[in-house]
Length: 370
Image (tube, rainbow, N blue to C red; front, side, top):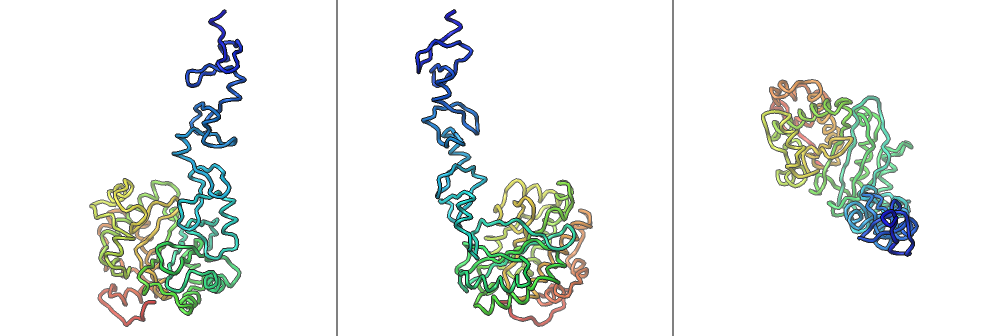
């Protein structure tokens, strides 16, 4: 009978062999195993309770804690790394959702990681979200509140404000996703840009600011394959017409290299997309950032407080999306810049193209960018 039993190394009780729990060459009965050990909630390895790197609710071996978890800097709660929030850019102080909400409640300028539930404005599938950086007027809630009162004065929640560590003394204005038509007809862009300028902010002239346009991936189809085909054509268009888009962007080549690097020209649209997906580039600091799950982000454009330029930029992105959606790979490859701009009819875009001498060699006088 001895082979069917064992003596628990902790309590000394003779116990049936089929109830044996082994850990670190020790044999434990079920009761001692329950009292002295626990299963890691991530990898399910049995560990001693004294070696639990997590807590009672989320027991963890040290390896899993180090790789996949951390603790809230305020309350000590165990957090998976995907569930962590931060204050501004301080990645040394992880927070749980509750502590983050308590800290940011009442703020006007939210931290960099703030992501509210999106509110979609307009009809259709092609939604655009704008991130406009403004600088040199102060990162203060008073000014941000004044701008938001102008931007959201109708009672709608079009804009919110976020901290941006790349700015000297300003913040980022962010819209909820909207269709181009909604941006043009409903959002008081001219008024809020004027208010920002009145408060002493700059964007183009600051030299630190960008104007980023997010476009919903669903605009290119429901299936991933459909989306990828269109995104590949967008990347090809950007690479083929890089010099024209550089001029449109108002950025310097050095600024683009730092904040919106190119992927590099290749003969086929799909080749550029495959290259981008392999990560041989600057992460999210690329001309078209593909790292967001629900959107692609056009990052080339320099910030501005000029209404016509904001509208023209939205209209250009919309036109590029049309090209990617409605033309084949071969048609996009054959498309010249002259043919592309000849199809641009939105008045703000046509005006801006002429100002930048990008419209069939026709130039006009332009106002100063702010």
